[in-house]
Length: 488
Image (cartoon, rainbow, N blue to C red; front, side):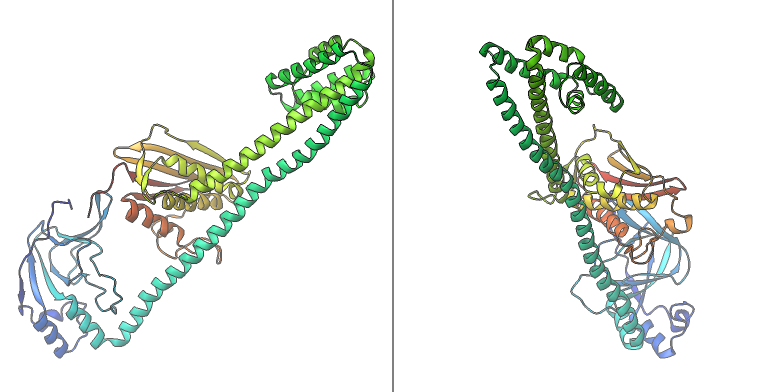
């Protein structure tokens, strides 16, 4: 149904459906003659020509409809599209103000779907007030049971949703602390080692100065140290095997010249990417065999110091990156609704869930970086990405490939989260977005993650979320509009 469609105000004719006719409808077949007469007196009939819109989603739920003849279709708005949910010509089916009997909780009751007559159709109509009166007065026990079921599920969903959010927050916090602890511990260890190396440098410098080294020679050693550090900074990165081979070469060279602690120093020089040419140059510039041992140790301390400072810089940068990702994930100090790049939220979510993903899952990011920004609630979308990625990782049981793909399709941005797990059986595919439905063992899932994700994407962003699954290839596809949804 397009935004220009309007509900056609077809007159309702009171008192034209006698009790005998009402009894032929399965909804009323067990009622007494008196009850049927009351309904006949308070109801009316309505004829809707083909193509007419009987009720529209979002309007106040003021009437209860029973189909007498014809064919109708129910549809719900998903973004800019109408998705048909039901098509029927069964006589006696009902729709409209079906919850009118519930106690007034202050929440406005509105039609949950739109209804269109596909061909000439006739309806029996009761006002929401009269239908609610019938239910409460004639079937009080049934109403109590239905109220308990409806309101109880609503309360349970609210309580479990809150607990799920707290559990998710705790898990994310624990994961973040684990991720932060690694670089923080590395920085602490490097700092302690750095203190020792700096003390060693001071000691060696004192020994060099006390060794009757000519001033010009001491100046040459300082220049040599700077040159070696610069060469180490520009040296190509070596593989583990290349580093091991380089250690053997450097260790043999130092042993031949009686350098003390040769193999320990060889590891430092090899890690710095230095080679035999560098050592030969050092030997030539030092000049004195007596000073070579002290000079190599002094320069070794300088190399270690540079390497430790690099380790500290990497560790602190990692901490800063994690904090930035956590801030972006939670959307602290940002507007609730803004224009965003979906990749930013996806990347921050992967960082936050890194501890859950583990080393057994390969992450493949197939991003279309040319995608434009979209209007969204980024904190809510991050919750969607968290649910989808977490479910995918759990489905693979710690081993497999997680594929996150983004691309454009017409006027939508598409985000696909796929895994190589066992898949979702066909019988369960239609239920995965239902509240409280879960395929996980008892205690491991609330059944609300995908329901919440569906409501965020569909209701909150005017998009759509779909599931395609077969063994070894399960994929959730999220469609998000490029533009602001039209006002209701």
